[in-house]
Amino acid sequence: MERTHNEDILKTTTSEVIVDYKKGLDVLLQRSFASGNNWFETITDHVRWYRVQYASHRFGKKCETPCYTAFFGGYPQYSPYEPIPSWLKPLIDRVSTSLGGVPFNACLFRLYFDGNDEIAWHTDGRKFLENDPIIASLSFGARATFQMRRMHNVWPPCDGSSTNTTTESYIDTSTPIRTFVVGDGDLLVMRGPTQKHWHHRVPKEKGRRPRLNINFRYIRPGFKAEAGQKTYYKYMVHGDEEAPKSWLYKDILKRNGGMLKFCGVAHGTIGMGNQETVETDRTKPAVKCSTAGSQKENCAQDYLTTTNNRKKKTGDGCSPSEQQDFLFSNEDVDATIFLSLPSSLQHELISSWRVDQVRPDQYKRKGKEDPSTCCITQKTIKRRKTNNFHRKGDYIKGPLDSFFRSSGSK
Image (cartoon, rainbow, N blue to C red; front, side, top):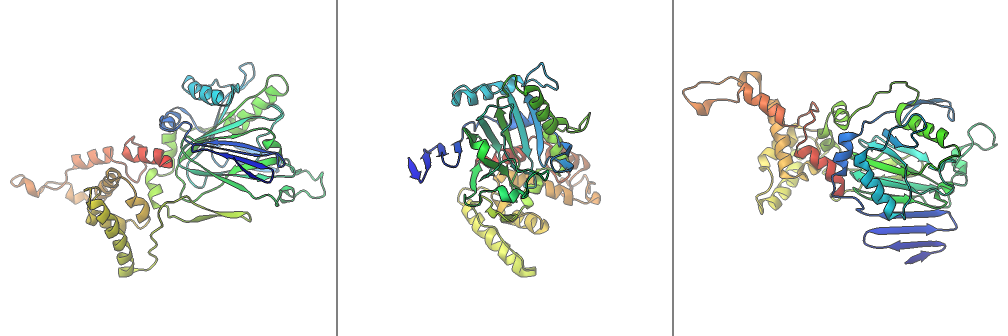
């Protein structure tokens, strides 16, 4: 166990416990708690997601939740109420057992489809939860940044009741912001007095692929339980609308142009306002070819040559000419990300791209007497567009979708 001032840090190969009694911090992080069980696919196949719109009395304006949300649980005698689905109960039981039998009865879901989705600084402390609630957050999908900052007051007044009402004045600037990178199957638990002294958030993050998390909570019976349950359903499901729209994950993919968009995101950093800059978690440097003409071709060609020399040893990957044609014809696709994909996905993207390049006058056969002179038929084009994932965002459960669903655990 490491000890720094009043802080105790216990680290093992799979877990980390951070306790700072003086600053009111108690965090448990268990790596790969629930990885490798296809939970991302199970959740996205069943859950309908909402983009909640509501009028904020606290800030005096209309707001939209900056990520997709859903909610299950509470008490059936209160309305609204959506029972926890049976497929989710084994996971709740596992989390509960690992934390000593916490009787979780409410589950908040958040989907961060891409790096533009976020959740702002906030505390999960509520009067209808226990005095020192245990908040367990389980992540699935791509890796994401989770941050915590200490506050002098986690509920800064916004109604003019204080002479100094800016949120910044209540931040403990003497305590550094804590940053965690959570991946597929990681369980992060905030315990003890943490919600009374700390805010947390998931910031925007350039290049982040789809990630979701389940937030397990216990609504205690009696005191303000009904009001608390109504609050959760309002801000996680219906907002101010009587019949809010909802989407399955496949619908969200179509609305956002499909998964191919994530191949075009360059590596880099993201700004965090006046707080700090968080570097995206990457294992390879970006290929930056900002010059035009032959210089750009040489830069990309050097990278292609290095990558394919490595692949030739095992016979893996597309041919260099195929890769080069695809990358030079699609300027929005980042070479580093594309070349890091498995060969089957490279073939799928290149095949889809070639289908889009075929002109209508090439659909017809040139003659029956020489089959070798036949071009691609209309039937073949239709079949390829059905079986392949292409830019229009058709949602097909193939290797490309599977790769992006599991990429956070790699």
